[in-house]
Length: 156
Image (cartoon, rainbow, N blue to C red; front, side):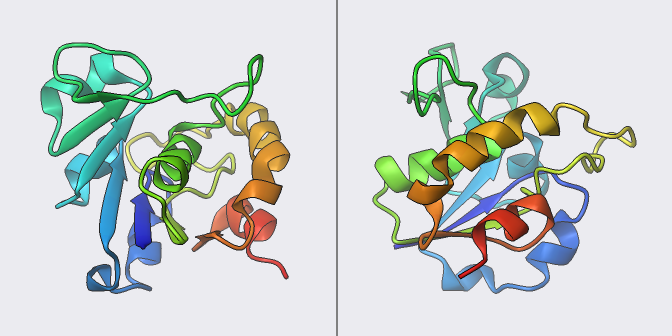
């Protein structure tokens, strides 16, 4: 099963232009990207208070709130952070959907701005550590169309 994960990184539109959405069995939109770049099959968020009332598809989050259709754990290990909503979507695709291949668009995980905020995303560095820790579980199944995650995951 091929899964496309769409995030809100600054280069998401250029990255989406590189692929054909019809080549994917499932499309997951993360947070605001689900709304902006739909249609999507799943709307995943670690911020359900912000997005549950705006959901555009089956909503998955780590906590159960009104509007959330499914609860799914966001942590790869106890004591770690989630690694971001983009990594949460990859975890869901691997563990829940049984994805063989996941392509990340707009999930660069660098300090560049999100599409909706012109400020640098300084939290990227703290989430990168979780990506590094779980990279062995991702390599061979998860590829990124750009940014820091492409450097981390797309090598041989």
